[in-house]
Length: 192
Length: 260
Image 1 (tube, helix red, strand yellow):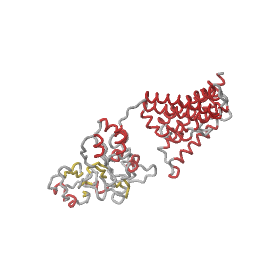
Image 2: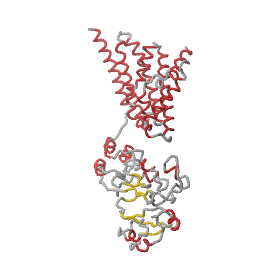
Image 3: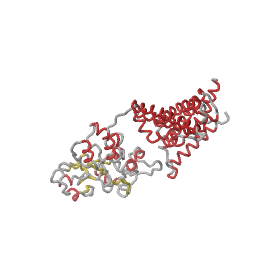
Image 4: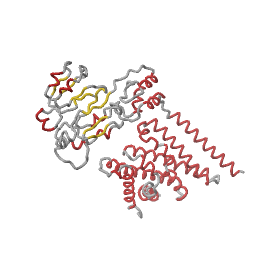
């Protein structure tokens, strides 16, 4: 059991990192990675949403969708749950951390359409057929992987601020190249 | 038939449950915001220049509403009367200010003492032998201020910075980033000013710059209002006393006193 969970964790964080090898959740990955502090905040918000989404959708899937034989509604119901969760996180953040709320800006409600959240949920339930504990671990670790990737990129971007970059590479081009290089580095974990 | 009704009912039930949870949460996490903050925020320029001393325009709006800042807090705002209306107080216009570059050291007037090949920024170059211009008080012209200006009012011409008075709001960001402290924030309608910052002795200035103030005191002697004094080899105009007659500018042998 423990070995299994450890395997899931390492796979989700490093080997099949959601951003760097599955290429999900690129929008916030590029959008909020300008500063390490906001990137970490985004990572935490996504971690909360993904873990909660994994737990709730697994329960809904098992006790409502499967029980009533309507798994074909999965995607719609899951998106619905994720949207509600994001609303919840938004309200909580506005109350308890207004500065992070304003720093995340438009990217906070956009977690709703962060495909990494729906992707992790569907992968855990559809593809891997995980149990509840495994699903929670998988979703949590996928989010940790996302956080790791976004913090790594924000660190690179903070150093790019002071670098002398040719004019045609300034802005998004250099960010995409950096992201690609980090992604290649993560390829080293493949086959572990 | 049941194939349709059951999913619809179930989906509605899930929706209802989520709706209830969210409405409870919105009560629980309710943040009371003053609607005036948003209204004022829309009236502010939205450039987030920081000239008011707050983090951005929305922070400034919040401070105005809370009474921590005067309604004229924003140096670049043209809607003070409307903000006053929202806040229910009378508008007292603050004197509009603008940035003035106190240097005439164009590339023709003051030569370079070395060629630098690297990051072209004033803050870097100013650390290397007081900058690459012969005059150590000169505007370096690499445009650190131009990059910071939120209103696009600055430009570099002939190696010194020029201010577009129409666009300048006097927020003072440029003055704070200038490593040479060559930009001064003064009332926009300032009539006469000395476009030089050099405190070197006249003989040194003559070597370094074709137009720099040499501290000859001709302006001081000729000013009827007694508004010009030479302090540390540099003519300084007291704007309270200055009548804007322009005699100093006329008599200045270096033509460094400018009339705007």
